[in-house]
Length: 256
Ligand SMILES: Nc1ncnc2c1ncn2[C@@H]1O[C@H](COP(=O)(O)OP(=O)(O)OP(=O)(O)O)[C@@H](O)[C@H]1O
Ligand SMILES: [Mg+2]
Image (cartoon, rainbow, N blue to C red; front, top):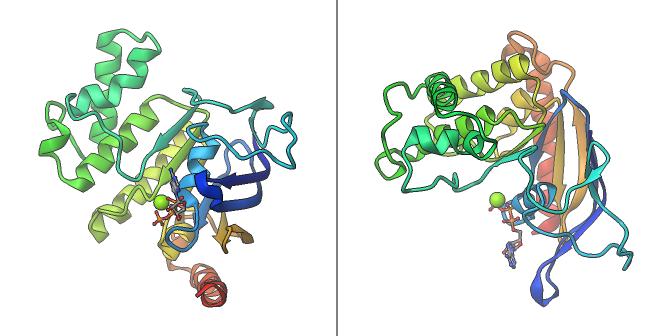
């Protein structure tokens, strides 16, 4: 479904951030991405949804490094929803209108979109907060509104940039479960960037490590227990967490 081949990115002044990143994500698959701060994870998500353009690959203008269902992704599309690191909510719209914005753009009538927004906000534990504006919501509540907004659009692919970073441990665990439930119900594949190895192993069917300067894909781990009931409490879960941590220690060490 999503195919990424030989993706390179340099910002202005020639700073090369990503080199030759390739990955593929099938329908119904999930991928967690881990990497040191500043290595290019957010940049990767921006490239995947067309918010940022890749650098030319071997000066070949016809090379399209990112395709979704065979179509090049060159600019933002409603098929790919992204939850930004800073939530990206509109401060002048209340929670309900922020969530239903994508449906409005698609021409869904007001009653239907308000109901969808209310239901999704309830799923995120925000019943009764529909009329609140982002300025009066906590960081974690804003994050949850942003997640609701992404899901309600029913995109083909969901990209999430540290979506649970400002939540307390219990709310975080609850929402991680909600994310798995939503995936089961709606079958929307996602790519999740996180700094937490446990979160990566809980939410990623595969876990990709991005590191280096410029960053490259350093390793990809399979996670056979992903999605299984009680996965978080199994020896396989802890073994994989340990294995990923060890490989991060080596990579981060080489870097510094
Ligand atoms: N618009 C830009 N122009 C120039 N350089 C940029 C731009 N955006 C990001 N960078 C640089 O690219 C590098 C990668 O940034 P990015 O935000 O992708 O990192 P990250 O892995 O998401 O970091 P973090 O874990 O801290 O969120 C950083 O060195 C950053 O300074
Ligand atoms: Mg980032």
